[in-house]
Amino acid sequence: MRIRRISNAFEEIFSDFKDLETDFAIFNYAFSVNAEEVPQKYQMELTELQCNSALKLKFENVDSKTFYQYIGPTYPQIKELASKAMSMFGSIVLMSANNCSL
Picture 1 (tube, rainbow, N blue to C red):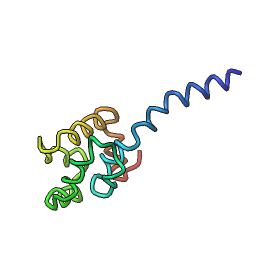
Picture 2: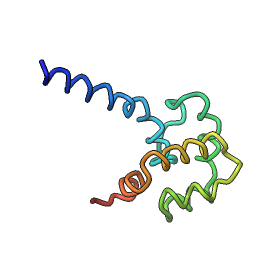
Picture 3: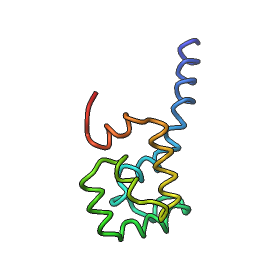
């Protein structure tokens, strides 16, 4: 019985991460995620971002934290998403985006 309670608690805690999966995909793979498959509030900005060749080049050449400093106020929804992702996990998200290991 105790194991079941622990298992249920674990599933409840980590279900929040499942809800944020799309946000993390946008954060880590902004130029390869399908804009039609993300929540509507991000679709227009993500499509415009993906069409910006200068930002795409920047995305390929800097880490995620640095990249989102370059987008400025032009993409407020994406900028907010990035701020949320960085504040939630800080260096863990950045390390994963850069294929680093602990």
